[in-house]
Length: 152
Image (cartoon, helix red, strand yellow):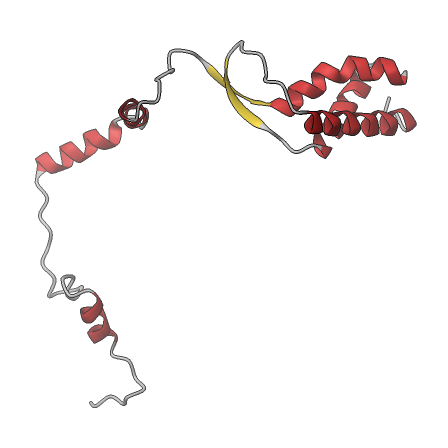
């Protein structure tokens, strides 16, 4: 049966795009895989990915610091917690646990997160003056909101 120009011969298009693939189905040849190949592939999949990452970091000259435990921290959270007591004392706000947590939560919701990976026990780095002003502004707004409507 002749096909019109508007009809697309999908099989012909597939052959032109993938000449080495051939047709799927009865005419395609089965692939034979040796048992040794399966064992080698299984061993590669069972290895943890960390080995590959450490090899790359050593090849590129990046110091390997896996022996020191590192942690992921939100620097903004640490700064808000450090400034909490001084802000509470200046604004004479309730110092109960619930109010403190509300102030911290409201402050952090207004601030952009800044995550860093640091070595455990390392102090958090200092922030610039603009970020410091953002933190203080967010904390003042949070203190005023909690002082106006405390939830205890």
